[in-house]
Length: 305
Image 1 (spheres, rainbow, N blue to C red):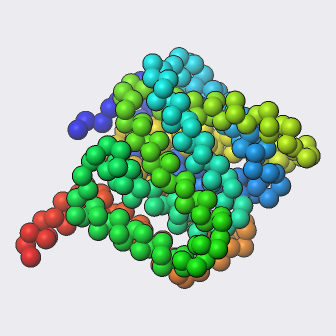
Image 2 (tube, rainbow, N blue to C red):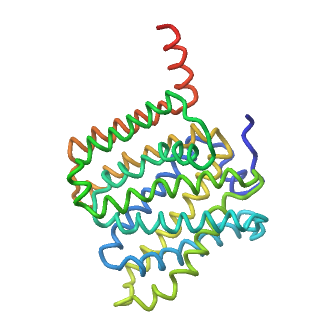
């Protein structure tokens, strides 16, 4: 299936010489840096004020990106209902991540987030009637085994943060599946613009009224940087998924585990437990089984035996 092209000058001018995988890695690196800023800000702001302030900076960052990448016309859409449903799902998913990031180590955070490919299969089966093949079923089983190894059931039940965070991947997966209903002509920026606009409308009033102190100059800088990083991540990953296959671009997400470990150790003094690293490795290995080329090789290998 040919990769759809993009007419955005941002893609054709700045990234035309970069392979899609490299662009995807840069995009997920931006998201990892944004997670660090959210984790830091979460220690000084409540959940609703944080969500409102981040929505504000991310919204204007995307608008500025759109302005310099072909004009605000790139944000137009003829599918408002799909964007509204995506926005609701992503708002709930984002709240779960904002709640969890300040409270758990980054490696443990990504451990739960990386179950998203498995939830995509499950959501597609339940709501779209898509059949799950045996290899995919094995991959899902291994993925959740990695979670069980890394997070003991007793710890999971007693930790409300993990329970809340575990609600994020299935909602994010459902939002991603809804994106497939949009035509390829839909700008990647619109996929980030409407959820941020919806979040801004929902949170800005309660966020401002719920602030118990004004942001310091440093906090304002971090908020602006966080918004820019989110917008940059949306643009880069959007371009990457247009330039190369979704399977290849999607695998760049797992580089966040590396950055999460490094940032957690250097900035927050988080030393990952061996059990967490083992579980994370199993989840990543299980996800590799979903890659089309690896799936084909495993099928051919099973036929021989």
